[in-house]
Image (spheres, rainbow, N blue to C red):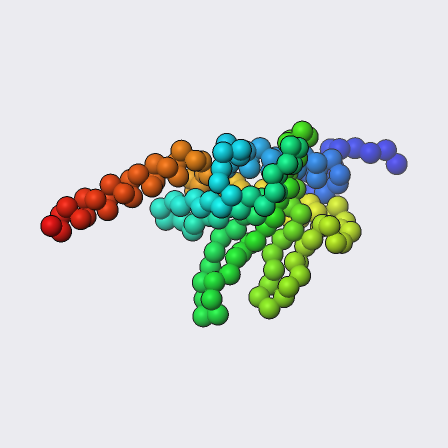
Length: 172
């Protein structure tokens, strides 16, 4: 049987095969670079706040010459306390310009991750689904205006200080 990369699962969506997975890794890398344009200058723990949207939390877990490992999540609170969701760890490969999910989500009361690429062998289909979720989520985050930028963080701190000073001067 001859391979054809023109297989379609749904109009506009490629088949869930290795070439499609690699394309998804490339698209995830591009979106992450848009979300974190200056990856080298970003702090180890950062938060992106956009009015009308949940705060997005970023932790740089590891920085190496050719890779960076990021943890990206929202923080929710309920009666039992706060928890992270979707709780995704992403490895960026700068030389190949790829980004893949290496672990995803822990359920409350469970210590092991639902998806952990280093401890289990997953099918291409499973990897495709997990990374497709990341692709859609990153697109949503960018659409709502999230971005992790050291300059933006400094600007928000300055604006907050100005607001605090104005509030104090109005009170006195």
